[in-house]
Image (cartoon, rainbow, N blue to C red; front, side, top):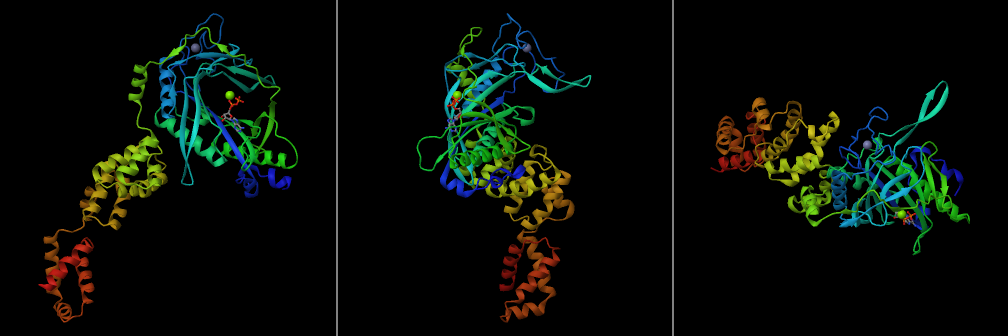
Length: 500
Ligand code: ADP
Ligand code: ZN
Ligand code: MG
């Protein structure tokens, strides 16, 4: 395979070539940082706030001044426990913090406070779906740590470039979620990160806004010959600040490693950076240059004990998880897997659906209306479901009216956009516009009688065996009702009247 075919693919890198994937199997493990949505920092009471003027949300603790002592935020621990529970982890009743020592200008303490040999939680999993196939990916561990500050490289003064340090972010609470090396394609990695983000947002522990750095991902990737048991040498790819870049970087890296092996080389264990402009990864540091963090237990903090009681409290406050809700939607409402998935993408969508079903009593059609017409209208208007002008109860009413035969599916499709425009209920619109479908037998009998009286010739023909004229008579009834008669009901009433 030529160099051009492998590397010069730019922004729209297609998936890895089939001939590569029939011979080699990628192995991927992700390390994801999630910023916890606390009000304050993890070890001091400074506010966590994005976009504040530089170095305004700081104090001796997060500035790393000598002698300042950290105090662990209870809220941060509770959010971290919530996240770990959502990832089906076991919460360790005893965990502790450790110092991870390294020098960096935006790390004034000279160390990060993290967890090392005794993390908060372990042995979890996340279920992912790709192309309708299910897979469980193991979560090795979830641990807590503080974030560093930020180096701002675009400082400019007196025609010189400066790098400034902003310590507002210093001490922001993070969790790191480490996966098992169990993903086998860039699509699975993409699905894992999607599911992870969705879960974190769903239980409300983080907004996971990637542009604000609230969700960050490093990818570990290696390749091995299909059928081989031993993993290949892994490369860590950093700087993946969007879902698309994660996928593109992995695809590039898989091809690079295969190319290297096929040409007789060996993959070096190293950290590489993904360059968005070139679409390539470049070496950042090798194993030999790897940091030796000299971890040791943090002497300024007591170990973290999570009692059964506290754990129960946090559990009780957690909402139903999206994966559980998905399953429940399939079982309780008889939804298709795909619809259940779409309806549990966000908590708001699931809540909307359930509120509508409570009124309609029909899960399947309600699901169809929500995922189809309603989502179409919302998308066109650039609105979130929480801002939907159609209240869930009104959508439920619409479905119920169809099921009761008071509204045809065709009329309902016309009414829905009007509900969207006005926020009115379907019955209000039907009354206002005279759109109510007539299924009531008594009302129809009257119209039918009038039509039969006005068309004696056709009635005679029908009675003489020319059944086909019934179609003409139905048409007359529909016309007389200005299209509002329920055709099925008309048929029935007409047949009776003609037989009588
Ligand atoms: P390190 O000691 O370099 O930190 P770990 O074993 O802790 O490595 O794993 C870090 C991450 O790399 C995890 O997400 C793990 O799943 C992943 N990983 C480990 N080995 C491999 C491999 N051979 N190929 C791909 N990913 C791997
Ligand atoms: Zn502070
Ligand atoms: Mg490790």
